[in-house]
View (tube, rainbow, N blue to C red):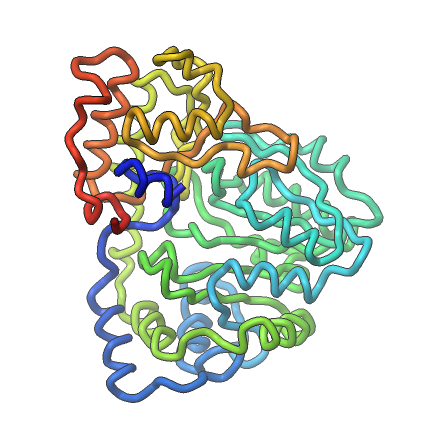
Length: 392
């Protein structure tokens, strides 16, 4: 979709990367590490300084004690952390429960691990169906992937929902593999690390990373917190997958974890709340049906009520995404990307709001032309590529 945005000079609200700068102290620390010749391999499971900083942060944030020597592994992003974990802990023939819609990699990662994904709905603005979840567990269930705040649904799972997941994991002797990459981008509810719930410390693999919190999606610094026996297996797979994450960038992330104050994280969430509200309001006024997300920086929308030239609402998700890019100048992701083959999403598209206000305001102006506001999409001014989150 980013290539499509380039082709049509459209505003790229598809791919989830911010177009604003990372914290200065983070960048300065990474640059300093390069100039200090920290340019060779770090320890395979992560630079000592970063693992120590992570241990301190998990203690401060969640009261979670983690041994940096035996329980913390630094990876090439949370994406590598997930596949390394599943390859390490899941066996052929096992089942892995995946909430749907899901981040695109969860289903394929499960299949690559020779396991069978079992899908359970987790829809925007709706509570988790605990009866349906319980029915999905079986004697073959090895793990459940928990993403909270979730992409693309925007749900922040409640304590009651997480406790229900805990009870099922304990009852079926299953693992929880949690993707908590959006833990600090939250508008409603609280972030509860499921590893802190009674009975879950030894059966949880906690995954997170620097990409979203520090706006450095290209740095590829993620991490895993897991009990020693699971960590041993995960580190073996990680070593063969990528050897290690970029050494100087690990130093930058360690500095950010140590030196950024709590006000940074509060300000991050508040700034994203304003962006969410801006885009959500424009989508509703434009005829999309959607729910404001509780966390993360995506809005999953139903476009079937949009009339548009040529009956835009009757298109499938891919056709609509292409049409919106070409005719309106805003590019989303087709909703079926977040569902299994034939699983749904054909009337859905996902927009991101991890963009500066000027980009979101222009996207909002263009989207409102769908509702018959003054002006037409064809009259939109060219938006410079450098301001739209991509290069031409």
